[in-house]
Every structure is written in structure tokens, then in C-alpha cells.
Figure (cartoon, rainbow, N blue to C red):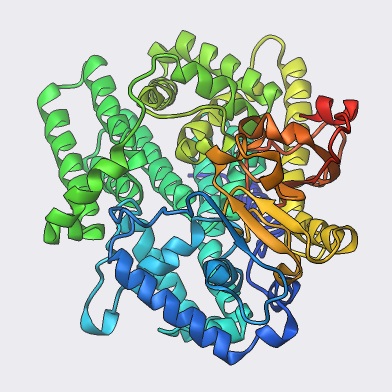
Length: 595
């Protein structure tokens, strides 16, 4: 029987995890959403009228009719203007070139992918029992709970569901409510993952799961994905549930645990094919039992039951892989494309995205925890399974494209969580040097909390009038004379554009690969360079050297040693505004160092 004191401690730990998750997950949850203020910043007042709403809605319908039901396989879904195009200043009704841009400010968030989920749901018609997503890259185990979340929000009056875009353009706050409802699912799964770590870690020590949960909730990678309407946190939750049940398998071997582990793994894969490696964890649990002397036949039979549960969970939540197999196979090459196996990827993953996600001190504790686990693994089945599972997840990165982008961690949250579980155990396990480990662990945990808080604060600033979008827009209107040419390398969107009056300037859109070779006479007088999660500047040379930096707007910081990684998020991107130098004027030394 569990002692009352332990129950009280468990409740207190769970409550503290929930509070930490709510603080870091909800702070700035409304970042980058459609607002009347954002629309007013880019449009002349007279242009914001019902006729424009209808025009934008009609062109939206015709565009998607042309694109077809499945955006992934449509050759035009990622089309961008080729060559050089311009929209002259002084218009009262938006020119055709700017229609998609202006519509995006009414209905899109500052994360380019979020709108796609609402498009997928809008293609369904529950009254006619039509639940076809027409997009298989986003799994039904996420899409259908997201739809249910929006349905509940609609039933309670928190959101309004309309077939036409017109009501949402008339009141952008209605569209913002849709995104908020979807992001709330990410926050719930984010907190749920922290609570699962609490449950898992208590197998080692009363405080291990609590510390692991806190480290997970503090992690910048987890904080970022909690603020986005996407699947990573939900499939990570399902995956951690599969691991948690697999820990029960190695200690008990009950068929019920096998089936639940398979069910959870199937739901994880059903939410995202990125979770496929999680299925191996259940097989490893069975292998550990057999290697420890358990009879192979019943374990393999139970493993087969787990496999059947996983397959059933996947196809129940993704029935159109069977019902419309032809369309699924058309999209499959786009889902699975990669750059080929790279044996160095695990090291790249550990040193770049993971280090940015958990900080160097916590990464060192993860390494210490792994060493301890490998030393003691034979004597502790649970510890061995956690360590082997982490190795499997990291090894699975060999077939992926990583680069140095921090956002790639959205595919590795579950493995990061297992590493944090080992880090927490490394801090709290009894033995030599425990006092030193506790001090170092407390310092590393505090630093990680401040890092996660910095990311959350950045989202908070991105949700208000002091975002870099608004600040850069105000600077442009104050310092760039009306009528001058302002250049971009991409079509303007809420994620990559300052919020300024588009009608005041001649907007020039230059295809990225052409800018560096443009004759000097064709260069825009001003260039806006955004660094949301990519950097165009190296590809803009030598022509960028013809410009001088007029102003730069960067993400806010709380403490000077904690910076938001440039590739982590599109919230509050850095904006650099360049002015074309007069002929014969040399490049400033400061600008040369900056570039």
C-alpha cells in the first residue's frame, strides 16, 4: 500500500508540472494571429471593405479549385512568382499581384504551416460523413482530435465555423480563435508529456520523474512546439505513453501492457510517420525479457498482439490510407523524401539541434546519464530499455535531413524526453558526488528554465504591438519616403514581412536566385531581409554589398547570455532594412562585419 506522504508528494509534483506547463505554454499563445490592427497596418482604410473580402474569398476558391484537393501533390501548391514583379504605389484597390499576400494577413498566422491544418479540416463535411483529409502527411490521429477540439470550441461559443472566408475577414478575431483552439491541443499534449515523464521517472526515484518533467517543459524545443498548431507534441505524448507501457512490459510482461504499448505506438505513427521508430521500443522490451530468461513463445505472441493493436490504431485513425489508397500512394513519395542516409546525422543531431534545445549543461547531464545506464543496464531492465530506446531514436536520424536547424527537433521530442529522463536520474541517483551533482543539476535546471522563459517571452512580445513586425513597419513608414521601391525575395506573408502600408511604396519581388545578378539600375532602393528561420543574405551577394544597413530589429532577450536560436521559430524574426548606397559610395566597415 502506498504511503499517504508519497501520494501527497506525487500530487504536489504533478500540480507543479501543470503550473510550469501552463506558464510557459500559454505565455504568448496568441502570437502572430490575425487581428484588426495587423490588417490596418498594411491596408489603406478605404480598401478594407466588404467588396475586398468577397474578392479575396472568390479568388481563394478559384485558386484552390485549380490546385485540387491534395496540396501535397499539386505542382502549383508551392509556386512563387518567377523573375521580377512589381506593384506600383498609390493603389486604392489591391492589384492582383498582392491579393494572396493581403488575404494572408486576414486569415494566416505568422507560422506558415498552421493554416494548412484548417484547410484540411475545411475540406471535410461531417454531416455527409465525409472525413477525407486529402493530405496524408498530417496524420489522422492528430487531425481528428484537432477537429474534435474545434467542434467543442464551436459548441461552447469559443469559435465560429463558416464555410466562407468572408466572416473571418470581416472579423479577423474569429480566425484567431480557430488557431487558439488548435494551439490549446498542443499545450495540453505538452503538459501531458511532462506528466508521463513524472510517472516514468518514479520507477527510479521519487524525484527523477518530476525533474525530468520540469526539464522537458523548460526545454526551448518543447516550448516552441507548444505554441504552434501542429502535431509534434501530440505524437510525442502518444510515443511517451508507448514507452511508459513498454517499461511495464520489461518488469511484468502482461499482455495488457503489450496491447496498450502497441495501441499508443500506433496512435503516435497515426499522428505522424516521424514516430515510426517508436514501434521498435515495444520490440526491444520483448527482446530484453527474452534475453533475461523469459520464455520466447509467450513474449512473441504478446508482441504480435501489440503489433496488431498498433496496425489497428493506425488505420482506424487514418482510414483513407485504405479507402483512398491511390491518392495516398501519390503523396507517399513527398512524405518520405530525404537526402539519403548520412551516418554523421546522429552526431549532428546531438551537437546542434539537441544542444540548442536543452542547453549544453543539460546535454552533458544527458551524456552522464547514458554512461550510467550502459554501466548498470544488465542489472536494471527499465534503465536498459530507456537507454536503448534513446539510442534507437538518435540512430533513426541517419535517414533524415538535419542541417543545423533547431526546428528539426519537432521530430525528436520523444527522444529528447528520454534523454532528459536519464539526465534527471544522473543528478539524483545515490552515490559518490551526489551533492555536487545536485548543485550542478539545480544550476543547469535554472538556466534551462530561464532559457525556456526567454522563448515564451519572445512569443509574448510577438503577440503585441511591440513585435519586430510592427516595430520594423513603423520604422519603414517613418524613414522610407512614400513612392520609393521596396524589395523582397519572397511574396510577403505574416511570417516574413514588417507590417507597413503596402500602398505607400512600389513593392518589388525578386526571385531569390536572380537578385545577385540584377544590374545596378534594376536594384530596389530598399531591401527588406527577414530572418525567420532561414538566412538569405549569403545568396544575395554581391549585390547586397551595394546596400548599407539602415535598421535592424531583433528578438527580445531577458538575460544577455540567453539568445533565441535564429532557426528555432518564426515568432519575432530579425528584420534588416537595407538602403541602396549612392554610386561610388564605399561599403561601411560596420556593414561588412555584420554580413
